[in-house]
Length: 275
Image (cartoon, rainbow, N blue to C red):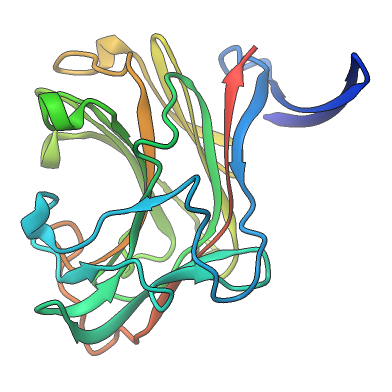
């Protein structure tokens, strides 16, 4: 697939507007719409700064707050766990320490209540950590989760990663009838590369009747309503989440081969809407 990135300056009533357009040309891939950038965070700032509070908020605490999965970390909003590095990245750091009654601390940030969108392209350029028991993720959750609950609200996992498998990432959707271990998932992997060595681009393109997953602009999974064993619940607004969990039923426990602290570097997060 050949990917084009086009930037256009438009002058309207004396002002300049910058539009970033993404389109993909391929004779085999499905038709891809053109997209316009509508939201982004480039994480430019001083080292030690917290993420932009107009764009991100936090989940604080442990699995007792409702996200469960037998995870071992306490999520905080401390700069030690989530802050800019001064080089254009946001860093989420998992630390082995006694904190809040847990054996590890980490961070989980989200755009809930600040930015949600129905359909479009959501992408992040990320360098992942390494080690058994680490569970970083970039994902979307339906904004009505607080009223109708999960999995009825829907969940789109753009990227999940088991730290003990640095050459693989997983993309999954969850909804009523296909949640948890029954989520509809596909794996993308490398033969001669690892996701903890350099940055890679993880993206989803989502429309009224499709969800398409990408790594480095290569589409590796496309889902339509007929591919799911239950109701299609991806027709409402979703918000974004970035986190690094430690332990849990998806990855198992850290071992002596898991060095700490461990860091996930996020170069940018960008959201587009179809024209």
